[in-house]
Image (cartoon, rainbow, N blue to C red):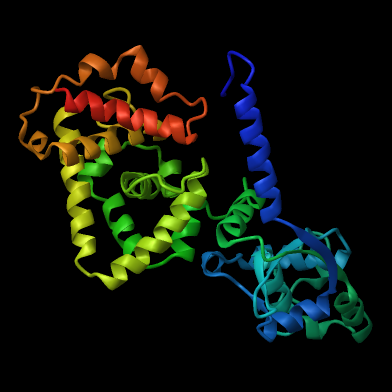
Length: 357
């Protein structure tokens, strides 16, 4: 847990207030209500848009049935979050599974699985219900929150991620993969499984499944290309960077190879000179992000500055002299790790040490 040894300065307090005000402006909204019938019809008519980052995540049949059972029983249904698009349609920020299930049951062929409470309804479709019950279900209302135009794409993705924390949902790397499919993300996915990188960046199975290595590869390129426009929010910065690079890669087919070479050259350097790769110990099963950023991007910057470092033999650069130092532990610590000054500081620390070798 991050702890402060002393009260924050007035400058940090002012910066925090400015950041809070900016974030609030991005998520202004109004609350409304929709009947189940309207929700089903609008889904069918394409008035509600399911964004790409949610399309591949679908409920299993038993979960759909359990949701419909809750709806019929009159249990509270969570808010559905929308964003009002420029053409007046509503993009579903959160709730696409509920809305798709409602459409499938009310207007489609969804037949309920084995139910826990309404056991006599097991196997029913909506059409099997008496007209009076159908009418009551159609008239049920569900509350919605509609975000206004200030909620940019990065803010909506962040909201989706936060709302779904702890549930079976996408994380930030998965969201970027779904929302920003393109040639740059293709390269990120490819390099994340490179055998040398896998060995250098150990992770437990949970982090791997959450696409932790894709996150690191994206940070390597994004931070390596410069921190202009970075505002202490890595997710927003990498989202915009990935979108920009997808366009750049599409316009210049040779760009992918140059970025692949940059990555491979840096990872080969790290493998040769850093005894445990990005891990703290020889048997470590974790790759701390701040440590990765310091070593990977610091090494890349040093190689940029002095390409001849790539030819130095293993053991000729004594990284161990400072790698275990208190100073390195301090610059790669968790306290304020995403602040731009801390990020620049840890990258520069490694770059300067290697440049002086």
